[in-house]
Image (cartoon, rainbow over all chains, first blue to last red; front, top):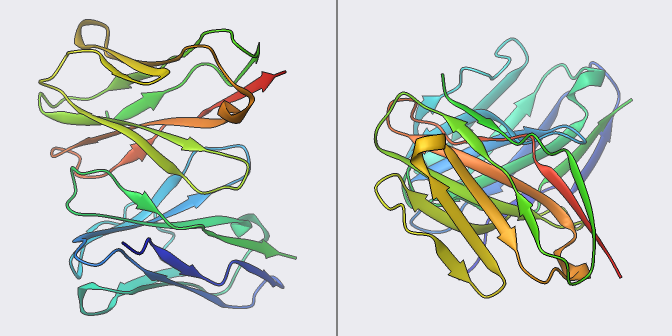
Length: 113
Length: 114
């Protein structure tokens, strides 16, 4: 079974530029998550989808971050404009359902300079 | 409030020692799920175990064991006879329907030295 796919693996941008990350979850998984992991910290939930609806986005900085889940499958996370403090690893995960174990992709390491 | 606390920031042991990683959670719900994940130096989070709130039996999987105690809101993880390959950051996580989101603790970095 294929795992969660994310791209790109690495991205370096200047502050105030925009960036987008892509995630392809495990087939059949209803729940999709985007987490932000700053070096030395635990993953922080940015947004959680159930099929193509948003379940929780309470910690998503909506003035600069946006996310969508296309047809309840793939998802993109966008940052516009980026700030220095957005430098982190962005992790996508999926699970069969909300109370099931989540499986993670390899993450995208974003550096904002 | 929904919260997961891993008070141990870093633990260092010598190979073959047993080590226990602590996890304390807070929730207002009676039905919930607890998880442990491993994050090796490569960075990808690897699922280890899922436990529901109604199953307080301890679980053992090879050198790994988990002790769930509802009375103290704890879900501790023990590695027996640790090995260098166990070196990683370990995260405890919680989900319940009342909060409807999966949250993680800050993690415990385990270093196993030869």
